[in-house]
Image 1 (cartoon, protein in one colour):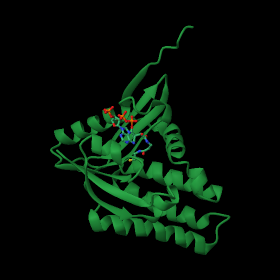
Image 2 (image 1 turned 120 degrees about the vertical axis):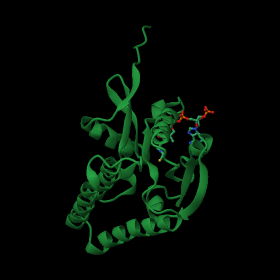
Image 3 (image 1 turned 180 degrees about the horizontal axis):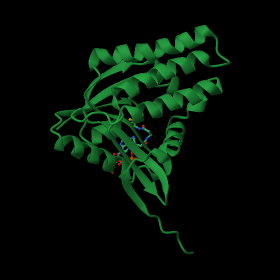
Image 4 (image 1 turned 60 degrees about the vertical axis):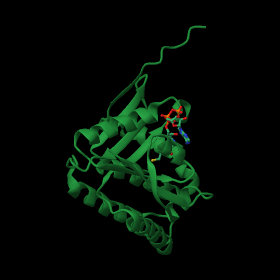
Length: 215
Ligand SMILES: CC(C)(COP(=O)(O)OP(=O)(O)OC[C@H]1O[C@@H](n2cnc3c(N)ncnc32)[C@H](O)[C@@H]1OP(=O)(O)O)[C@@H](O)C(=O)NCCC(=O)NCCS
């Protein structure tokens, strides 16, 4: 049998990659199972993915046979955000407008969702304020996991931060899902915290954790 040639490479993110990145996020965390109604699921996956795009200035993807199969979006604090902080602010306002315009949810349900976002942010702020260099989002397609691509992307981000004299990189992860991966790469635990958002996405493991990597 002739096996197809797999051509895999890591390259910079392009705007046309967005839909594939959003699909990878949705598949990795099964958003459609955790967020109801469907309109909230679509909004949640967009907030998670596009929010990371506008909040990142290091964006690389793993491409296999022309398809995006993994990516890392990170923020290097020593470089400005390409799209500017104003874009991030405008995006947050757009999210609020979309959330309160959603059909199939009562005002109380929408407010409760917003409260969860806020509780997550408050718990996180007690450990670490926003602004440090951070891995915002990292996903590798399940069929290509454990082949070194996640590590390769993190090492490229570390290299980028090191060349800008960034002192440390942080990452937020679910305690069960990716902790082992970050520890293996030399990240150490800063602290764990209870997160209602992690509880939605992963009912058995409501604990989130912040890790740091010293450069
Ligand atoms: C976490 C994730 C990005 C890891 O990517 P990956 O390409 O599978 O990881 P790598 O193959 O580069 O792994 C590097 C090392 O970490 C280990 N590792 C990978 N995932 C691990 C895990 N969940 N627990 C423990 N060790 C893990 C690998 O075995 C490898 O060790 P080795 O060098 O001794 O062989 C990937 O599993 C993923 O996309 N998961 C779903 C989304 C997610 O949780 N993202 C992180 C949130 S920020």
